Structure formats: structure tokens, C-alpha cells
Length: 137
Image 1 (cartoon, rainbow, N blue to C red):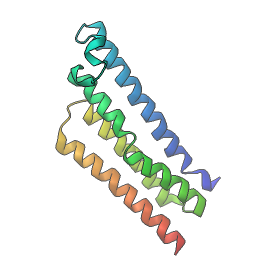
Image 2 (spheres, rainbow, N blue to C red; image 1 turned 135 degrees about the vertical axis):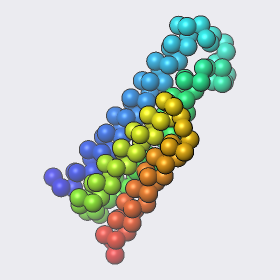
Image 3 (cartoon, rainbow, N blue to C red; image 1 turned 90 degrees about the vertical axis):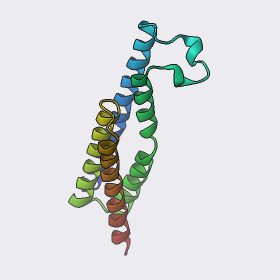
Image 4 (cartoon, rainbow, N blue to C red; image 1 turned 180 degrees about the vertical axis):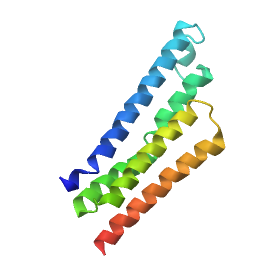
């Protein structure tokens, strides 16, 4: 069971991607309902959506950037047995940083705070990578 500890944060990250997708869908739907945008306005480009819908869409795209590295690290770490408490804590910290990043991005969108949340997540990934490398040495 100890090798499966990293599965839970990975599943949480996948769940979070679906949460962001739902937020994006609802904001886009609201844009149509409130007549802020028409189908023909967004058939080719999404720039006509209101800012809130574009922020949610941008954040959904973000869920497929550094999280890809996270998922690969989880798989490699599980394969090589780098699944201790530190690695698990780093994985959960990474997921928490993604949640905070989203809440800032789709909320007040304060770039310094959003950048800090992103940086913390990247640091977690770097430390996870280091943990895998040290396991292999």
C-alpha cells in the first residue's frame, strides 16, 4: 500500500482539472445566457468571451502544462519506489499550489500571488524529481 500513496494526490489533481473544466463551462454558458457573446462570435476564436470565461479557459489550459510533469513524476516515483512521506508531502503540496493558483487566476488574478503559487508548485516538482534521482543513486 505504501507504493500507492502518490496515487491520491494524482487523483486529486485529475479531479481538480474537472473542477476547472466545470467552472469554464459554467462561465461560458453564462456568457451565452446573458447575451454577452453569440455562437458566431466564438466559432473561430474565444477572444470574444468575457474576461471571467477567458480566465477560466486559460486556467484549464494551465492544467495541462506542469501537471503533465507531475503525473510523469508520480509514475516514475511509484515505479522506482520513491514513495516515502517526503515525496507524498511534496505531491500534496504541488496539488495545493495548483488549487491556490486556480483560485487566484479565476478570482482576483493578482499576478504576483499567482506567480508565487506557480513557483511553489514548480519547486515541489523539482524536489520530487530530485527525490526520484536520489532513489536511483
